[in-house]
Image (tube, rainbow, N blue to C red):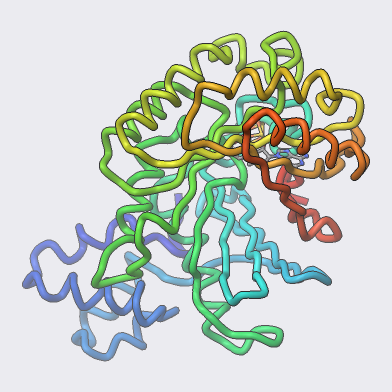
Length: 339
Ligand code: SAH
Ligand code: SF4
């Protein structure tokens, strides 16, 4: 291991013998003022800045790709040389969403997902998740393209399955929640999972107001198992039970994600089956996502998506449709594979 680049994991340790206010000052400089170099933290004594510069560097090693649309992808190189990807989505209403990775690669091998095809390298540390957010927060602070702004939303929809790295994900959220630092409230975070039921249950006990999204993508176990091998371990019945318990406990809305893949999961019969599956789940809605081609399947035709949505709605299930940006730089969901 060599720490020439950002490693804020040992910040607290370095400052443990200093008076408590030093840690507050350091955090406020890194997460509030978004400094990129300890020399900018002029409230800290020179010697301390030097030590922090050596043992807790702030430089981030990254390459940015800008999309024609309002999207940017960053490829970050971690201290052990592994590469991960994060995406910035800039919305018309001035919201800026960062899509972060929770793992380098993913062990779950969903057929439609490029990350799944690259295999699993390792879990990310909490500060490697935070680093992705800081990278874009710094970028947004500078005149970048035409607009400036700040990070308003964070979604765990990049590489990896967040609930297979639960503790680091929760710790990263808590670090970014800090009122004296980055100060982004839990409601602005969303975690997307394939339905790791232990993770759903654990989250319901966290007392964090984050949003939960479940990647469903099929209305029955037979199909889901084919495209998402993890369904063998977490079949739909188990996931639905965990979601019901979660809603009962937290009273929070849950989003079901459903990628529309031509002739795989987009028939009228499948729409009816999906409505049936979700009938008993109050406080939920379906988000129909256009499939970003990764080489295997084709996206559903708009007309099919429209009919699918109508069937859901006719059967009492609310549904929204999400268009994806950034296909030209492979920054769309499911297209993260480190190019
Ligand atoms: N592992 C988690 C979170 C990361 S994937 C999960 O699967 O939920 C984030 C989202 O991108 C998921 O909803 C996933 O299903 C979706 N996705 C994966 N491949 C995609 C593709 N080719 N087109 C569109 N969305 C895709
Ligand atoms: Fe992993 Fe999510 Fe991709 Fe499936 S969709 S392989 S769980 S990142």
